Each structure stands twice: as structure tokens, then as C-alpha cells.
Length: 202
Image: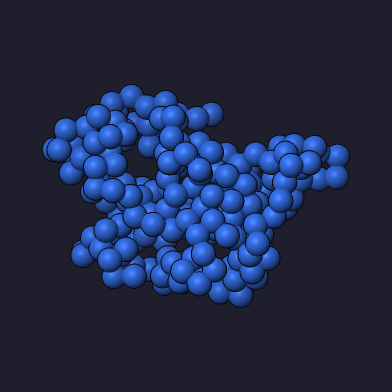
């Protein structure tokens, strides 16, 4: 865990209990075994050099506020904490998803809402889960994860598709992401301008 903590947060930022417990759950039950394609893990040091074609100086500056902590889809997309105004309190940091095709999206206002999104058990491609009911197979430890967030943090899982839906997203998931975007989307786009324009996933 120390290696993960140092790669994700560095030595100056304290690892919150919530992330520590999520890491331990992932270790116990296995990556991608409780929410489709999700796994806790640090990204490579050259992630942003590759993702944005940044120079070393830009990578250093960008990485001061963006802290990737997990993989979210099967093609290299990842989730990161955004330390707004350099706030080092990770539990208050919104979660940004970086899609493998360059799309970026604010998905949750904090790690607790993000864990609720994971209970929908679908790939967070470009920050938005989408399920085809007839093709869906639940992850092996989906229920264990739901029980875990309820027991440890008193969090409720998001609702499933309603009976009339053949495909789509959870209404709860949509609300979670909409709330996060209302709080942080415009601020994030503005913050990002010195680093270049982004392809924001609407």
C-alpha cells in the first residue's frame, strides 16, 4: 500500500481512510471483480506526457493537482482526484475520468459518490456508465462491494435500470454526475486552459 500511496499522492499528502479501505477491498476481492473494468492502481509516471503530449515541465505542474488512482475501463481510461486550488484533502476532491480516446469528464464530487457510481457495475467509459440489459452479467463480487460501502461508509448503491429500460444509465448515477458537473465543470475547463483545450465529454 505504501508504494501505491507514494505513487498516487506523494509523500506530502495523507492517504485518507476511505481510499485505504477501497485499496484493501480491491486487494482482497481482485481487480475488475466487483465493478466492471475497475481496478485500484497508480498510473505510469509518463501518463500525462503521453496523454497530452506534455513536456516534462508541464507534467510536473499538471501532476501537482491531478492524481490518477484507478483504471476505469478496458482501454486505458483512468480516474483521478482533482485537488482544486491545491487543496490536499483528498476526500473533498472531485473525480475526473480521462477516457482512452481523449475525452475528459467530471464524474463525482468526491470519492464517496464515485464509489456509489461503481455499484452500477458498468464500464465508466469517458466518465459515463451505459448498460445493455440483455448483455449484462454482474461482476462476481458486486454484492460484496455494495455491502462494503454500506457497512463502512453508510452509502447506498445507485439504482439499476428501471423495468422499462432495455439500455441506459442509472438515474442515480446521472444525478451524481450532474451535481458534480454543476459544481466543478466550468472551473475545471477554465483551470485546464493554460495546459491546452480539452475534449470534454457532455
